[in-house]
Length: 116
Image (spheres, rainbow, N blue to C red):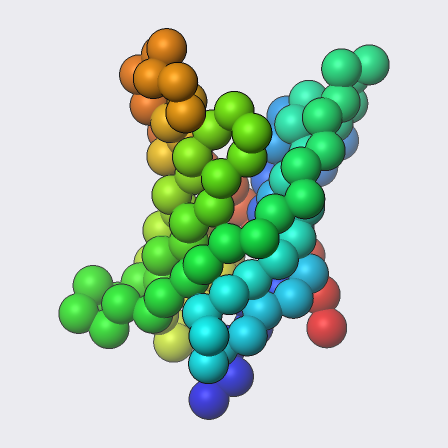
């Protein structure tokens, strides 16, 4: 079965979202995905991270987990509703600074659109 994880996920609305997480490709067999994470995208301090990460389907939790790192942070995301009509519409994210200088923060990323 093919899972449509490719898409764009944002916090807030599209015109003022501070984070834009875009999954552009994935491989179910290996559990790998790639994409881009934009931070502060509507400011002069825009940061672009190219992402290579991992995902896995959690049938026992009815969710999908995603994991990746940027130069400054470790990201863990969880998308509920595995194989349901709301699958990959929301990602609950935990962002942990790699240097542990601050406690982890949580964010909700909503699907902005789906890529083919």
